[in-house]
Image (cartoon, rainbow over the protein chains, first blue to last red):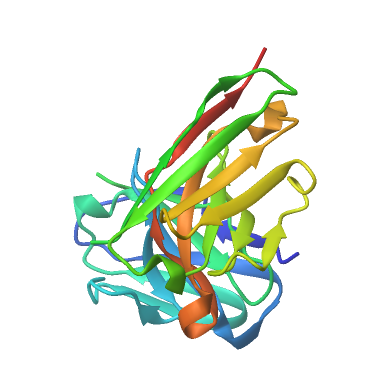
Amino acid sequence: EIVLTQSPGTLSLSPGERVILSCRASQTVTARSLAWYQQKPGQAPRLLMVGASRRATGIPDRFSGSGSGTDFTLSISRLEREDSAVYHCQQYGTTPSFGQGTRLEIK
Amino acid sequence: EVQLVESGGGLVQPGGSLRLSCVASGFPFTTYSLNWVRQAPGKGLEWISYISKSGDTIYYADSVKGRFTISRDNAKNSLSLQMNGLRDEDTAIYYCARDRTAVTSEYYFDYWGQGTLVTVSS
């Protein structure tokens, strides 16, 4: 099983700032098979990014993803209060597994 | 609009059973494979089961293998999860999620239901 470790665990930023979230895999994730999800309180996860860097339908270009091998990042620019959420990464090169999530608060 | 609506959650004693259901609408049900993914309180997401679009291929996470059974009824656009031998650690929100393997061979989850809470406690 591929274990994904996300960092930081929690962070608090201000509107307009930029953030980079990290997702590190215990083994190489083949073919950049990594997705990111956004989950707001009381809601289901929402797909943001697939293939490490392809935005899902309807996701604004403030969100961008990069990485390969074992290290992946999700960047969010021009932060808005509505970006407050938990962000999960998921690998799908093998049996799917998720990171523990990063909680982002926009004050 | 794609919709996945779960039901069937509740409070159950350890060792008990529960059956979850998920009704789908807004897309051709038989074109997509489906999954159950759970989230324990304050924890990350955990994939637990997959069923192919025809129902002939099924996978389980080790944590539920032998206790949970996934099935689907393509005539009713519904997905089910029969959970037996429930344990405290099965307490979680259970989500029904559609994946893209049957369309693009990529195993990520593009639509999720709102989830149903299962609490295992005496």
